[in-house]
Length: 475
Ligand code: BGP
Image (cartoon, rainbow, N blue to C red):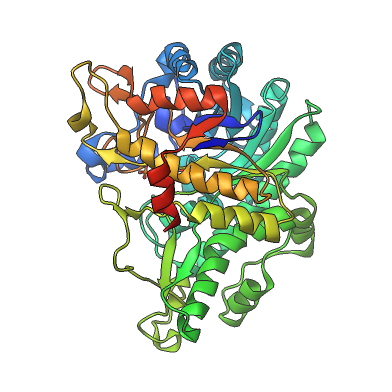
C-alpha cells in the first residue's frame, strides 16, 4: 500500500554540534568535553568528542552526502562553547562565526533547510563550576545572551529555531539517574533545574520575538515524549502512570505549549515541599512566550507500575520515582543493543494527544531511530551496510505517524536520528544510528541501504508500505 504524506513534508535527519563537529577550533569545554578530559574511561572504548564525525573539517562533503540521500531539512545545533568567547558578555569568536555562517550557507546552497537548535546537552563547563549550571537562573540569562547573538547573526537565513533539546534528559542525566556530568542524585535540585530551563526557554522565545529578523521565522522546543502506559488498570498503576506522565511529559509540554505547568504536578510538588522557587514575573514570562511549534523525539515508551515500596515509607530524600516504577512488560519488543523497547504505535498516541490536548499545535518528529552496534556485520560486498532493520523501523513509525496525520494531527515532518553516524554521550560510537556510516578510523563515510531507500520516500512523499507489515502492525 502507498501512504501519501503532505506536500512540503520535512524529510530529514538530526544531529548536534557536540556530536558531529569535533572540538577543532573550540576555545571552551562543555560538560561532556570536560568529563572526557577528567575521566575518559567512562566513555565507550575511551572515545571522546574530540574528533566526533569531523564535521568541522568535512562539512561540505558531509552536506553533499545528505543531499544525495534526499534530505530536505537537517537539524544541528550551534555550540555555545564554540560561538562565544566570554560567556558573561557573549562576545563572539570570529572564526567560529565564520564556521557557522559557512555551514548554514552550505545547507541552503544544497537545498537543505537548516533547522537550528541552541542547546543540546552542552552547557559550558565553566558555568557549571562558577554557578552550578542550570541550578542558577543567572546561567539562563547568559544563555539568552548567546541565543540573541545567534538570532542576530543567522536569523536572516535560518527560519527554524529550537531553544533546547530534551530538557528532561538534562534533568534526569545530571540530577537523578547519573548519566550526565556531574552525576548527582538530588530530587529537589532536579525540580528547580527543570523550572530554570523552562524559564530560560521562555526568555529565549521572548528575545527571538524582539529581534525577529525574518517574517517567517519560528521558534519551538524539542521534547522527548515518552507515553507512560500503565501495567494494569488498577487504581495504583493508573496513579503511577498519571504521575509519570505529568513529570516526564506534561511538565515541559504544558509549560512550553500552554504557558503553565500542570496544576496536579504543582500541587504534588508543593505538598512534598520540593516545589521550585518561582516569581510572579517569571511565571508571566512563561505564560506569554509559548512555542510556535514543537519537535518530538520519540524512541521508546514508558511502562509504568505502582512502586513496590509505598511512597510514604521511602527514604527522606525526594525523588520523582517514589511515585512510579518501571515495568518490564512480558513479550515487549526490544532493541537489545540500546535496551529500549520498540513500540511504533506510541507515535499515533502522541499525534492524537497533541491534536486533542494542545490545540492541535504544529509539530514534527525531530528524532526517531534505531541504534545498532557492530553494524559492520551487515556490510555487503560493495561495502554498503544493509540495514533492513532500520528501514523497517522507519516504515513502522511512519505508518502510525501517517495514521495520526490522517486523523487530523498537525505533523509536518519526520527526522531520523541521525544523518551520519555520530558520537554519542558516553556510548561514543557503540550504537550506530545513521543513514550514512562512518569508519571512525579514517572518517570514510558511505551511504547505507536505508539512505538510498529514504531518498525514494523523500523525493515522492510516498511511503511504499508492505501489506504484510501493515497488517502485522494492526494486530
Ligand atoms: C537523544 C539525544 C541524541 C542522541 C539520541 C540517541 O536522547 O537527543 O543526542 O544521542 O538520543 O541516544 P544515544 O546516543 O544515547 O544512543
